[in-house]
Length: 413
Ligand SMILES: *Cc1c(COP(=O)(O)O)cnc(C)c1O
Image (cartoon, rainbow, N blue to C red; front, side):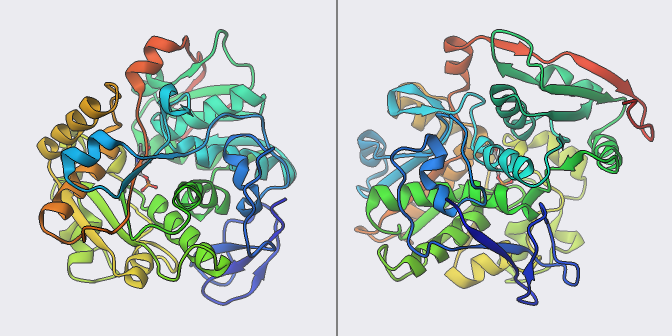
């Protein structure tokens, strides 16, 4: 299974695996290098663990969650492009998609939880009430692995899992403040022994988990796609797709050219698009919306409003776009909403996550301005969807609040 080493992308040194998130001497990303240069699709492993050769773990969990690549004939004819494929992670039973919290954040949560367990164990601490928080809570609940969520008071009601009972291994702490207070409280909690940070984009388990989207695409197509579309917030998913492509090139069986990344953000919050337009690796003040708090409220796809994306970091979004000649797109709410309707009409009424609708709208733009040739293969990463079907098909339970704290306070153990 996934035998690997970790290497610093800035200095090239090998980093000891101790649930390491960074190099002591450099600030760039570290990356996993797998013993298997050619990946074997593991029929007998469940879900995402089909790709365990290229996950930084040595064991698996009995999950059904995995990215699924399929062709939507109806969407192909609507868009007038017949080489369009969808890689979907969410809830869409007719297509074999069973991610119960509805997004590809489950792809990050699964290997991350195992990586913690295989490197000393502990309680994974996550400050999110969105897709990330729910994905880690669900996976923690499903497999009895300890997860502690820290969220603002006002967001406590967003935390549910698909379950018939309140999960025992998941704890919810709320902070009487906003997200930055919740993040600060989570950082403080991680100073206690036994409490582990999920690590964001720096965590190779999160990136390589999301990289399975490109692996699913490559195994289904029998080669790398020419184009890859995704909505990006932290940008980690785009970086993960690029890293998977680099490994697939080295594998030798999937083609000889990196897919072009087409990454999209939602107006008026488009800092990476603005920086990339100048081909600058720095997000300047003027790339951010004038009033970030207001802009966050205005966008349809709120998961795409990360204020500190993995853009400039060595091995991050800028490097990824540069190496594949990538493009970025600003998408309006109306464009995203009409893309969402287009998808639902073509695919059994499945409601896309707004971030996935932003990606589809970007694809529509690229097709209409002629930047995709007729016979080129396109992968649309549908990063989330099927929420209304989850509500219909599954029983959800809210996670009760176990402690309420004030900003600056930490939890009682
Ligand atoms: C988090 C998320 C994204 C953005 O991914 P990043 O890795 O942060 O760029 C896109 N779509 C959905 C559904 C998400 O939950």
